[in-house]
Image (cartoon, rainbow, N blue to C red; front, side, top):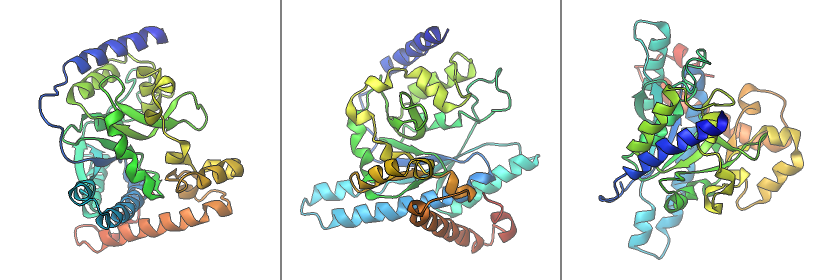
Length: 320
């Protein structure tokens, strides 16, 4: 059954790829993109935005002193920072919370888009009504490439900004680059994805999700996309990212030697996915600098929101 689903998915995507147009020049801008599904994603999204701005500023400063002239200016082009928030029913509390979340993220500097929630298996997992909403990142064809980050990811080193340089390795058939999953390393994690956006591919993926045509092992985007792209482990090296570009903080707690290895690779852990830190769970000294910086950036984001008269302090403080 899974093989049949993969074949069906491959057929849909092949049709989508065949209709992609290469006649026009690609859009000039790249974008960082996250998806915030509820008010509980607020603090994480604020810290993420702050970390992106910090390391993008470092990139632009470095490029500004480069002797390459016009080429340097092109490299230093500003990148969009986008948050997708599900549309909700304004007559319900949940819908009003989503509207407030969208407004707060806009104040924090995100370009906010409202999207329809997407479930990967509507019939089998009715409670997971938005678990595949991140698929909308594939449809942002107004950007040349998209670096999707889970709202609880955190940019920790400048090398993360260089992931966009891999965009030319993405193809219609292999439109993403990803790091291995921590628990299931033969699969890729969907918490950090470099994507080649395409309206045609976006429509094909949404159809597969809404038809329940793909068996997602976790009921979410990770199981869904691994079923759609089951041969990721065989792709070229630029499409298989080092775990330091999607490093779970649990590695520092459960395998300190592994975490030290990633910290010693390149300029260190480049993107950290926060689970223990944001929940205040047991940590190790190795995580302390990341936890301090995450809290500082989240607090700065909340302070900016609280300074805006449209957003009451009491509501802003509810973010998790």
